[in-house]
Image 1 (cartoon, one colour):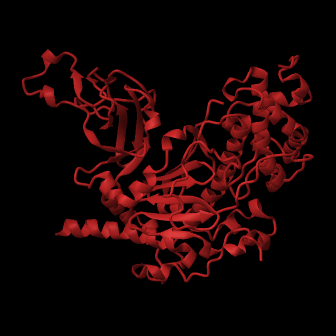
Image 2 (cartoon, rainbow over the protein chains, first blue to last red; image 1 turned 90 degrees about the vertical axis):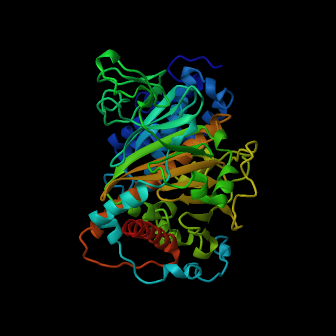
Image 3 (tube, rainbow over the protein chains, first blue to last red; image 1 turned 180 degrees about the horizontal axis):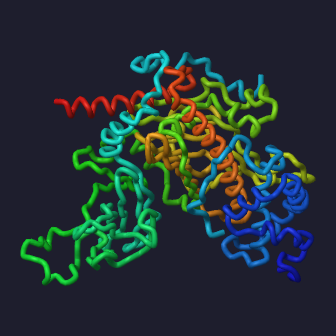
Length: 113
Length: 431
């Protein structure tokens, strides 16, 4: 395992500035964060993580999915957040889903990991 | 000719196969009338099997959860010490207090318990509803029927792991109600292996049938969801399969549609290349999208001969509609989704979306699931906003009738079946 000086696995330390906002454990937190950001801010996060995403997935695949250490779990949460911002950045060009009005879904159940 | 155009079969219009439906304009008075809502409640919801959950929510003896159904009541679903699933009216035999709740009596709850204890005067019940202890019994009278005291049981049956209840004692059994075809085709899917579960719930300002209508046709995707497909509408239209490529089976009161979709990506053998602001790149990176994950679970044995009964090309999923308010979608790419619409008033319903995958074997599989869930919910939120817009417009009665194409035959059928059920119940009462 790589040594960790920050909160992420060492070779992904360039993503440290994004941990506070985007290493969020639950989908409702990630969706709420998305709505607090401008589309430019979402784009900056996307552009920071996307070039590292493929390597991060390959790295995380060397661990047991149900037994990820803390730093690796944070990295996984960042990838979940990349998915959360991908539709706004690539398609909607705005944080909200177009024509979603007041629609909001409460998450009642989600996996522990 | 694009590959999607090749899915066209050239078959004649589907609606003509069901002459009882006609082809004329329809009224949506059934979706805005308070009087019809009350009649529908009595004729359908008080005497039809309703899904209330799944057996995975009751993993051990002594576990329970509650459901709050406005207009029908609060019920407790439990697994008793005998291992059986029970559904109980959530009401104390003493003075009618709600027995099972935490903090807020109007909110649903879950947990495990050896017994339920009423918060009012401490009466206790087994998880089968039988009253096991009356506090200060000696202060009551000989008229207290100790052996008969209990939280009243509702009829409760389980099929393919789905728990159903029925508020009527006279209804046919669940299996008779669903029929052999539906029972066989549902039981062929190994639901118990799909335990990685996401659940979503929202309250929609619109009649429950208008909510269901939004998922009953393949006319809207290029318009409501156009931007997901292509910013250019004429290109988006070409990405929706032709109308004659679907399969429909309207076995009243239930129905089935089978839907085509793109084949999964090939196994990953090389890099997806430099990062791009392009959702297709994201789909390739995370190996998933609105039609499911690209890496199919091969060890789960869910692709049985019962799937794709209409034998359509590029089969993506079978969407079963269980009357009155439940859709179960079984997907080729190895997951299933349920959609349920629970009326709360003529103009509101609770909308529940539940998505179930097998347990992921690695991070790649887990991320594919995340992308599928995210895509499904982004689409669903657009649909619900359209439902609210439709209902608010319908409700002023500026237009009296509406026009349904062949693409909307399931909407025609669904409203027809609801009206028939109400009429049959009312005719029975008049006899």
